[in-house]
Image (tube, rainbow, N blue to C red; front, side, top):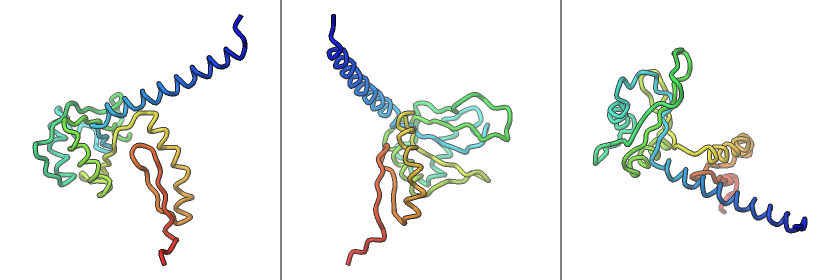
Length: 172
């Protein structure tokens, strides 16, 4: 008969293995999504029948970037089931770019310039994160109002690490 202490040690080792495997899986998923961008706010059916051609013409105009070589996609599509009610928020678009540096350029420009506009619609472009990473990033949301109240400057490092500085400290 196996002692209780041996069983506890075995379960503890399995828990550590499970945590390690989960972190490895999140890392692999994040790496597979690093060339993806999320586009939010583009009205339904704006893209016509060819999403890649639509994004290839719209993204350079929105971001004012000159892509050399030309912007190319592995795939691009809307996320979720089609909506018949046009009054609902439009489904997000996920685009997987062929070149990593193009995805980085677009995301850097989107961070600096904020929301873009197509007609009357605000368009946001964000990185595509795994579910686990999104949950880790959301954990910081509760801190934001308090940090603003304290007059502190803050932000998130990619993917989910917060930085905070105190602006009220003088450098005399």
